[in-house]
Amino acid sequence: MRIYWFQAQAPRRVMALAKHLGVVVEYIEVDLMAGELQEPDYERLNPNMKAPTLVDGDLVLWESSAIMAYLCLKCGSDLWPARNPSEQVEVLRWLSWNDCHWANSVATCYFEHVVKATFGMGPPDLEAVQASLPDLRKFAKVLDAHLEHRAYVACDRLTIADFQLASMATYWREAAMPFLDFPNIARWIDGLLCIPAWRDPWPDKPLG
Ligand SMILES: N[C@@H](CCC(=O)N[C@@H](CS)C(=O)NCC(=O)O)C(=O)O
Image (cartoon, rainbow, N blue to C red):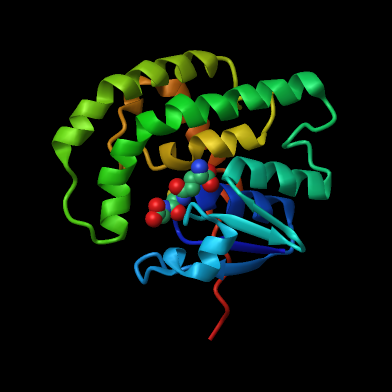
């Protein structure tokens, strides 16, 4: 099984899960800045020209939530609760909420403060950050209330929904996301960072 990746939030979810589950994977790092996502061979695998992409035999899969569900199915993990319909619906609800609302609302802070710094793309556009905050606060209020008596987003245990929702929010301090005002979100993120594979999702570099 191969996973194409580079150090960014969507590959992060998949890499953390694979490490957490102990799946044997060949990791292929693509060089974003060298334009490798646009190379025809890569475009044939992932026409979105984005990462991550998983290849397992004849199967080619993109979209990190689908890849995470696939990894769980492969190793029989209930982080994607395939055998429990009501849990599955609960996880699906939060995956959908992430992709339609939460990811968009945290993306500006993350891009302006983390992505630009990582790839040397210049200073953050603070006006854009400011303009994104009403939406971020609107959806943070929903998540914070949901997490009030919970350690995890769904099913009272770790699921792929946690990794899906937490990937950009994990960087809330450096990304200046206002989670001091949403303490249940801050507690949930800090709790996830106790999971070794979530804290350090990237493949070990070969020695030497
Ligand atoms: N919805 C996709 C998002 C994939 C995505 O946007 N990946 C980003 C990295 S976080 C990417 O490859 N960006 C490169 C580009 O857009 O050129 C998923 O969850 O897999």
